[in-house]
Length: 412
Length: 135
Image 1 (cartoon, each protein chain N blue to C red):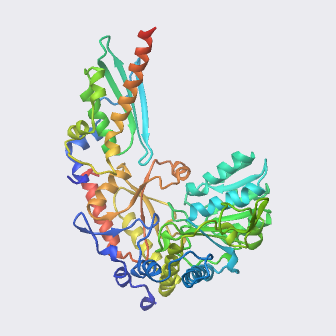
Image 2: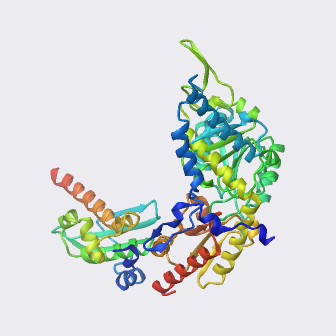
C-alpha cells in the first residue's frame, strides 16, 4: 500500500507559496482548518478564466457570455459529482459555508421554523453553525438544545437520541469538528433526525476537503462547505440542498438573475438552483473550485484521507510523548480528521503561536470560533495544528522543534 | 525586532510573578476589557488620592504573557502618577516600557490592552468628577 500513498513532497512542489521563507525559515503551514494554500493549477484556472472567458454568465447571447456560462455550469457539475449530489439543481453557489448556512437559515428556516419548535445543535459547532440558529430561534421564539461531548471528545449520542424523542424541527451539526477533529457519523445522525421528523443541516466545511463525502449516502437535507478550505479561492462556497427542501425554501437574496419574470406588480422566481443566486456570481471562484476538485480527484480522496490519518497518527505519537502537552479530542487517528488542538503547560496559545511563527511554523491559536466547545473543555484557548495534502512528517518534526523552543523560553 | 524577542527574562518574570496583582477595596476606579482575538482579560482597580493621583493600583486578569506582563508593568509605572499622566500615555510609552520597538499587528493589541483599560477607567472617573463639580 505504501506505493499507493500520497507523495507529500511532490504535492508540495505544486504550491508556489510553500517555497516562501517566513522569518528566514522554511514555511511550515499547519493552519489548514482555517484556510488552505492553492496549487498552481487553481491559480492558473482563475487567471485563465479572465484571460480567456470572462463575461457575465446567463446574460448575454454573445460568445464570451456563453463561455462564462459554460465554465460556471461545468464547475457546478464537478461539485455535483464530487459530493455525489443526485441533481444539478441541488448545488447552489454561495460565498462560503457561513453564507450557505445563512441561506438555509433565511431561505428555509424563516419560512418553516415556528414558535416552540426545537432546534438541536452540538456543542462542537463552529460559531457559523450556532449564531444563525440563535438569531432564527430569537426571531421565532424557538428553543435550542446543545448535545454535549464525552470525555473522549466524541458526540454524546445518548443525549442526541434523547433529544430526537422530543421531535425537533431542525437538527444542525458539524460533520467534523474544527477544534477536536472528531468525525461525526453524519449518516447515522441524519437517519435518527429524519425519523424524528427533523430537517437536517450538515456543516461539512471540515469534512468535504478531507474525505469522500456522499450527500445521498448521508441522506441530509442541506450540506454546507467552503471552497477556500479545499484548495479553491476564498469567496466561493456551496450549499447542497435536497430538491424538495430547496423548492420549499424562499429566496435568500433577491435581485437580478434569481427571477423568472419581474413586473411592476411582482416577480416570480427562477428555477433551482438560480433562485438562490442573485446578482452576478463569483465565476472566477467557481472556476477555481472546479480546478481544486480536479486536483483533489487526481490525488484521490481515499489517499488524501489516508495521508491525513498517517500524519495525525505520527503527530499524536510525537505530541503525547512530549512533556507538558495536553491533546484535546479523539486519540485514535481513525476517529479524527487531520486536526489537533493542544496546550503546552500553562503557556497561553498566543504566546506559543508567536514563538512558532518565529520558526516559520503557522498554527492557529485561540478559541477557533468555537467558544461553547472551548468552555465545555474547561479551557480559555488552545493551539491548533491542522494538516492537508502538502504536509509531511518533516512538518510535524518542525512543529515539535518549535514547541521545544517554547518550552525552553517558558522553562517548562 | 521580531515578536519572539519580546519573550525575554523581564517579561516572563512579570508574567510569572506579577506585581500589583489582585483586587483593591475600596477603590475609586474599576475598569475591565478583553481582547476578542486572544481572549485576554484585564481588570484594573485604582484608589485615587485627594490631589487626583494614583494612590494605589491593582490589576487581575488572564491571558498571554504579553498582555499580563504589560498590565503588571503598567501598574508599577502608574503608581503615584497624576491621573492626567494616564491621558498622555501612548503606544510608544508601552513599547518602551516593554523594552521593544515593535510587536507587529497581531500582538500589539495584547500589549496595549491594559493601557486601554486604565485610560477608559480614568476617563470615566474624570468625567464623573467633572459632573460632580459642575453641580
